[in-house]
View (cartoon, rainbow, N blue to C red):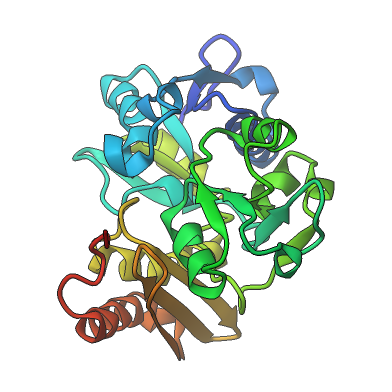
Length: 315
């Protein structure tokens, strides 16, 4: 049976957070759907939803509930029927979705690297001992302190524009942003340098946009299937299986990256103590079809090597 496509009179409702980056990702999703089905922009309505994570900016995420703070209100609106689909930054997404929802559509992945941003320094290596680095990411904090324990880390939450303003106000001497976000905002020039993944392995799913829907919404399923990027899905299957098996959250410093080469998939992963004092990593290659199992096996190996208490905060 043919689906009934949305129209200006009955638009498909796209839910999103309200930051400039979140809106850019929603616009990209709308643009791809318009092209795939030859529809006008008016056939889609973008609905901004403010999440708890957007409202509370003065406390670390680990103190107020972790990743779900950026999705809960959006998912509640989708379950109630207030929106039809939701556009997310995949690195913010929990590995499990609420009952009745599924996350099975990904747009082509952007640059996965972290960007080094500073008004006065060109590279992280140029930072003098005692300089302050602003970040709210436990992964970035732990990676930084592992290699540069001489630097001082300060809490630095907010969207891209907020964090750049904090740099301007000298809250910190430098910060890290995702290259993908800067590119999507046409702000790649803000990065003084991109940090190679051999130096700083990115967050799981960094650079990827995911689109969530109700499991029983066949119209949304068919429409989203037309814009799904299979290679991105294959990479994230391995990365998110790794994260899920580690029970990853905003309280655990975890990094992971899957890359494709023909029919092969290479997966790199690492876990760190929150204070950066220890790091355990692995690097494996296998078939694309085995990606999720590779992720689970790597997680089990790293957990066994880490032992009890590895993720505990030291005082």
